[in-house]
Structures are given as C-alpha cells and as structure tokens.
Image (cartoon, rainbow, N blue to C red):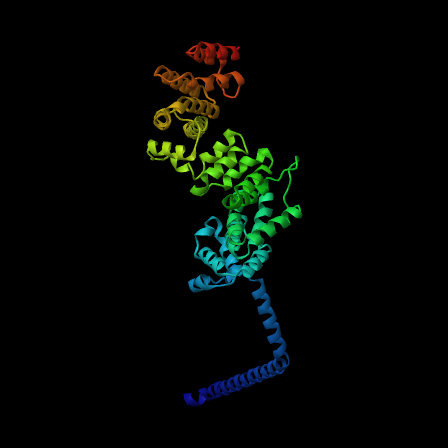
Length: 441
C-alpha cells in the first residue's frame, strides 16, 4: 500500500531527469554548430589574407633586422681570416676598435705583412682609399708610415711626394726624407727628374726670407752622391745653399766612407765656420764612436783617429768642448729636482785629459757653463762654482774659469756678477785677470 502511495513522485523525478538530459544534448549540438561555423569563417578569411600576412611578416622581420644594432649580431672573425685576409680596408676597420693597443694585435701584424706583399699600385690605391675611412688618428699615422716605408722602394715618386707634403704640414720630421739618398743611388735619373720637377713647380715652401729648409734632405743626398765622383761639384752644391742652412746637412750626412773622409772634411772647412762643421763631425760616423756617452775606446786610438783625419789643435779643442758641453746639458736635465753629482764631470774630465790634455781645461769650463745655463738654480751655482774652484786649485789653467766669468758678464748664464768677480780674482794671468774684472764692471 505504501508503494502505490509513492509511485507518482518517482515517475515525476524520472521525467525531469530525462528532460534535463535532452536539454544538455541540445546545448552540446549548439556549441558544436557554433564552433563549426567559426572554423569555416576563419578558413574563409585566412585563404584570402595568408599572402598579405606573409608579406607583412617578412617586412616586419626585415625592419627589425635593419633596426637591430650591429653589435647585437656581431660575429668575431676567425683567426684564420685575420691571418690570411687580403682585404686592406676590412682589416683596417676591424683593428680600428683596439684603441691604444692597435699595434699589438694580430690584425696589425697582418696589415704590416700585407703592405710588404702588395705591389706599388695596390699600395697607392689602398693609401688613397684609406683617406675616406673613419680611422683613429694615431692608427692612421701608423698605417701611413708603414705604407710609405714600402712605397719608398715600390713607388718612390708617390712616397716622397707624400713625405714632402707631410713635412711641410709639420706632421712628420724632415729626417723621414733622408732615404731619398737610397733612391738617388738606385735610380739617379728618376730621382733627379722628380726633384727637379718639385723645384720647377715651386712645391717647396719658403720662409719669409725666401729660403726652403725642406730642400735640405734632398740637397744633402745630392752632395754626398757627388762627393764620391766629383768633390768640387759637391762643395759647390753645398755653397749654393744659404749660409745659415748649410750646417743643417749634418743630420743627413752621418755615414761618410772612410776613403772620402778628407774630401768631406775639406768641403766642410771651405763652406762654413769651424764651430758649425765641428758640430757636424761630432755626430758623424768618422768620430761618433769615439765620443759616445758609453764609449770605451782607448784614448790612444781616439788620438790616432784625430791625427788621421787631420784635425788641427783648434778643431780638437772645439770637438772636445762640444762633446763635454752636450754631456753637461744632459746632466743638467737629469739632475733637475735632485742633488747634483760631480762624479760624471770628474770621469769625463779625466777622459778628456787622457785624449787631449791641451783641450781639457777649456772643454771643462764650457761644460760647467752649459750645465749652469740649463739648470738656472742657486744649488747649481754652488755646485758649478765649487767644481771650478777645486779644478783650478788642483792645477787646471785659467781657461777653465773664463766661460763662467764671461757668461756672467754678458748675461748668457744665471750667475751673479758678485760671485763671478770672486772667480776672476783667482785668474793667475795678470792681464787676463784685469780684463775679466773690467768686463764684470
């Protein structure tokens, strides 16, 4: 009886469950239908725009690639490329970022080797094109020097034209043109023709008084070339130079063949004052090894060499004085800010006395004057005065005191006249002593 009473509610529950299940099925069908429709719409639109999408994607990618900084994708060249490349400009720009260590790299070594392997035309082309490259100044100067050094042998006309231009712009020292003598010896016709074209074209700058100092390296080469074949012509060429420029040839005539030594010395004697030509000979191959700071040559051998060269007593004295003065100038620079040391003076004076006793006192006096001239301090005055007094009291002649006294009298050195008068009273020769005291009044 209870079962019949609860039957209707149970049936109602079952009907409701069936209805809900039907509703869920309808919803799933609707969702699937919507999804299918969305796919069809997407397929239809994608078929018409796929090419545009690809184009836009490619354009965007290319734009991003262009905008990306080089450093983001920089790939360091391999060692093999650096060591074998023949692309001068690429190597230059690769090495340009090295800063102060530009000449310590493998790329720089490769550039040097490449310059030695390139022909004259290739070097000229690379040299010219490099002017447009954004290269650091110090690195550029180094590379130009390397290239021009090679071009002196491979295309000397171009090389010396560049050297001359740089020299006149004061960017290099004229001594770099000293190798013109090698070209003149190798091909005198070509070298002479090039030089004469420069002269005719008035390429050489002139000073206000009409002189051309930059001609000296080239004129020196012609003088030394003529000395070997026609000493008289060499002398005339030297005399054609303005008198105050003749001594400038000394820088470029260092290496004199021994068999031409007497012709060379005679040419100098007849062309300029003794002080000037002895200054050339002091730094010349004929005597340079005798008077180097570190020379260990036996004084007897030095005397024999001066005898062989035919130096007069006055020339020997001048040579010794110039050498000692040069050492004193170096000593003054070295002693700045430090206590002066007389050990160097004592050693050199003893060496001068061993080489040529008659020249030692004057050479010592001029050296003391030079030291004081380059020091200009009270301590240097005390130092020089004591040495001069000690040497004189030890037997040195009056010649040792004269340069200091005269330098004080004419104002060329910083040495008070009151102190110079004390030195003047020590002069043993009565006439000379009175003359020195008169100059100091």
